[in-house]
Length: 315
Image (cartoon, rainbow, N blue to C red; front, side):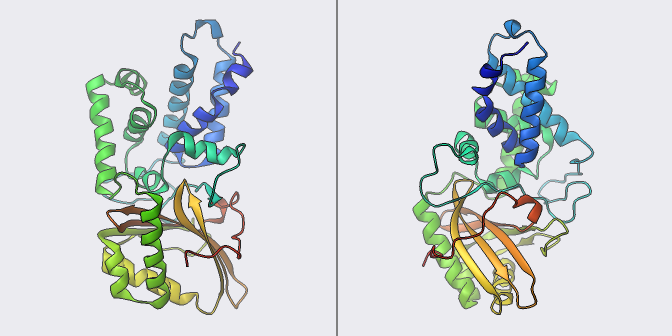
C-alpha cells in the first residue's frame, strides 16, 4: 500500500501538472485524489521513482478527462471552440491573488509558481487536442522525456515529439511567446485602460497586436460574447463599447495577479440591480496585447474575493 506522507510530498507538483492540463482547479483536485487512490492500491516497493510514477498516473487520468464526453469537442486548426455542452468559449479557472508577495502557505500560489504557466497559455492550449496538450505540458513544463510520454500516449517517441510540436505551433499561432516582464505588462495595461476609459479607438489600436483576440467565458450564466473577437480594430471597438456600457454602473477595479501575470479584477453593479464580477487576463508580447481573456462565469470565480476598492487601478 502507498505511503500517505510520501504522496503528500508530491501533492503540489501533481496539482500543478493537473491544473495545467485541465485548466480547472476542482478537476485538478479530483485528478490528484484519483492518483492517490491508485497509488494506495499498489505495492509502493515496486515503484522505483515515485515522482515520475505519480506524474505519469496523474497525466493519464487528465488525458482520460480531456478525452471524455464531458469535455470532448471537435477541434479545427486555429479555432476557439466550445467544450461539449458548454455555452460559448471555454476559458480556464483563473488563479487570482493581490499584488505583492504571496503568503508562504498559499496553495493557489504554489500551483502557479510550480508550473510557471500563464493564463493566456492555458487559454490557447484549449485549441489543441488532448494528446498534444498532455505531451507539451509534460515535456515543456515538467521535463518528462519523450520516451515516457510515448508510453503514455501509446505512440513512438518520434510521434510523441511531433504531437508536442503541434501544441507549440498552436501556442505560437495564438500569439503567445516568452512571457513579458511585470514592468512591460504594467506599461501596456496602463495605456490600455486609459484608452478604454477615454473611448479612444486609435489609442487602443496602437496598444493591440494586429492579430489580437478577445475571448469571454460566461458559461451561459453571465453575459459574454458567444464568439471571440479578432483583429485590432474589432477588439478596440469591442472593448471601448464594453467600457461605455459600465459608465452608469458602480465599478470597482483592482490590479491583481492572474496566474502570476498582471491582470484586473472588476466588480460591476448596474443601476437595475444586476451585478457581475470579471477577471481580465492579458497576453502581452513586444509591447502590445496579443490576447484579452475575460472570465465572467461565476462558477469559475468562486475562489476569487471581491476587489479591494482602496487599491488604485494602475493610475
